[in-house]
Length: 232
Length: 281
Image (cartoon, rainbow over all chains, first blue to last red; front, side, top):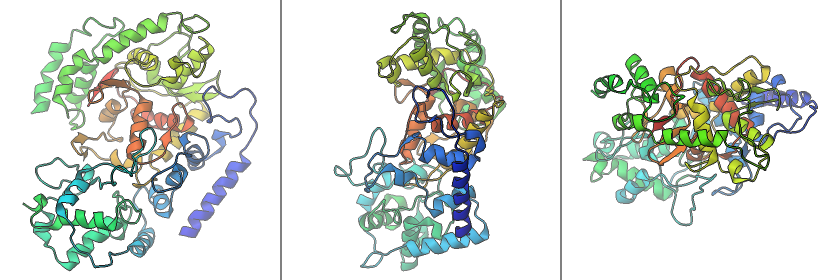
């Protein structure tokens, strides 16, 4: 499946190269866009879409990003992003199997075992929306550690408003307890949710290096600890 | 409950736009209330307060400022924008914005309102690209937001109808769809992540569903006064904000990638009335 995907894309770019033709006249005023070399009407939606994102100058790909490198790497799709986009998040059983296997292989565990951290720190990390933003207003990670953005999509403590894109986590620890199996599941879901839900909308907080192990254990404590407001 | 209260409003507001913009037959809030009467949408009804305030939308003053700017001889060539063709002929603003983005023969490009305005400011009025009139795209004080708000107000209540006759218009729309669903960046997100279901929220904010036309028309009705920003904002500003939050690269205004997205999102609202200028949270 993966091999097929690559060859299809290679074919796409070959077609794009073949579609090159010279258009006369001057370029439009503000344009990397009409570079006068590419005929959009000869390209498939995917070819033109990829061209616009990665080659046309429509996005600032040169900007440096917090994890090192540039925005170009951010915009270059990895295998998971590619497959899920193409399948519109409805992977075939075969694709889903591969995604789950890859996700499982990506997960690492803390050296001292999966323990609960500090739920108070986890509360701040769950609430915060800081980190990894770039473009016109980049987040400076030297001033503050990136947070988890959990409340964007999840209801957690009943005294704060959370989003509904993800399931409610209110009273999660109260219902599931705090045993080894639950901690492992929560860790793996945060680290790479595609291990359980292929093409999930949830970010890969661990696998993409968005949160440190310590931060993830703090957030886990916020979700599972009996004293956390989530479980009152 | 909210819906019930809102349905009482149209009677009170039916007398048109207060002291503003004599070209506008109807206050944009009436277009919104018409949609609320038609469908059940948590997005359309999320802020009762905003709907109450919308009759006196500060954006209506920006429309007035734009009117003044539009007819004023400006730039090195000292001419107005009256000869600018937004797709319906030189100086014709009626329903022009609702039929954009569109292909323009003179540039050979599909252009959105902002790109077309830049083109006219530079070619007709002679402004250089780095003149603040052209360069400054955001904020109530920018020429762009004034002019865009004015031009767009002529499409208030007009059904979105971006043409798909030219092959480039179709190509851009289809590429826009591809980009809309293209997951990338630190958070693996695409536009679709937040805009494919009805009634979902990011924190307290209800998200519009791109496949629910009656709510999507409000979502794409820019310029809109954003209450939380205290500024009138554009389509390009919305794209910039979404990409920033998705932790993806910063989109370049006027670029074909952004215009492709706008072509797609406008096509999705086809047939639904535009709310211009709108007010958003």
